[in-house]
Amino acid sequence: MATLLHIDSSVLPGEASASRAVTAAFRAHWQEQHPEGTVVYRDLAAQPVPHITAEAHTAGFADPATHTPGQAAAFAGRLRLIEELEQADAVLIGAPMYNFTIPSTLKAWLDNVILMGRTAGESPSAKGTPVTVVASRGGSYAPGTPREPYEYVQNYLADVLGTALGLEVDFIVPELTMAPHNPAMAELVPLFEASRDRALEEAAAKAKQLAERSAA
Image 1 (cartoon, one colour):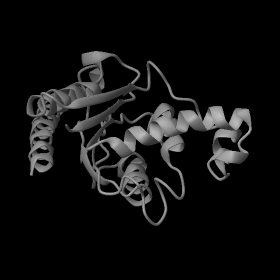
Image 2: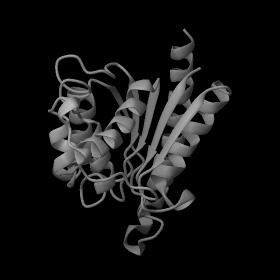
Image 3: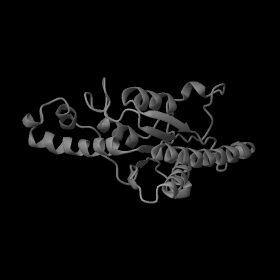
Image 4: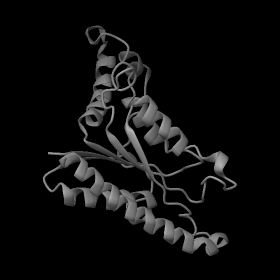
């Protein structure tokens, strides 16, 4: 049976979050294709993983037989997250843009799962696993826009997920999500709606594509 690792990091609940709305659509379509599959879900806003500590960090470079009790406990938490990634057939990440970059909770998850010699390095243990990132943002940071130089979500995640972890990264980008809430952006509402609808369509298509791929 196929396994989907679904991670949300928006601080907003449910439909109030653009990224959650799209990840929920992706997950629903994925489950339609995999009715007997498994979904491992982590809501990093509701239940944050610990930020990396000295004990968790140093334990990753030490023989487990030499771990102190503190290192052993901290590393056990990292291993749970690492194993969830390694056991997934597909990964889905909601990554809204906060202050030009990803939420700190998502960064904490990444710091825990990136382990040199295992998930990162010459032979990443989850190499080739497809990961779909829903990178929502309140404005537009697309190529050619004034804010293009401030795009630190896709640029960062493409490197850390694709290069460091060896995952196969694809992005879905709902943008201008603040348009319905900011009077100064009222004229951009139609563009927001088009972006939202396109993101939902892409989520459905990507979920179907990955289902067909896992069945092949």
